[in-house]
Image 1 (cartoon, rainbow, N blue to C red):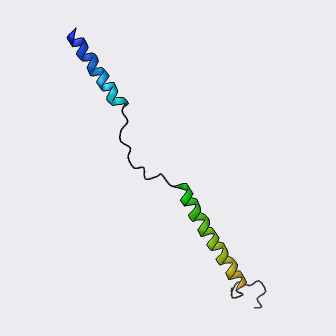
Image 2: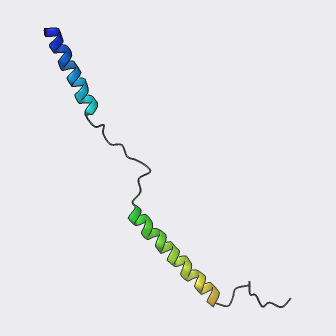
Image 3: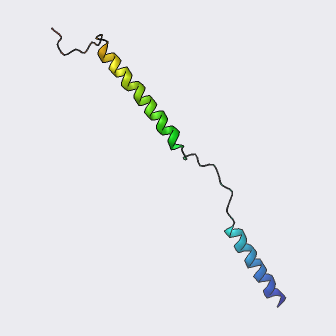
Length: 68
């Protein structure tokens, strides 16, 4: 019966190791979506204001009323 007990302890030990979680590795595709969103909105706002300034500067070469 000692061999059955050893086998049982061995199997329980294997199951315990299998159920233990592996150490978490750093996932390179995990993003902080809040900072990504804020950065995107900031860049969009800057580009929007820059576009408005270019239109209002009246120095744009692509006017529709150009005489050729």
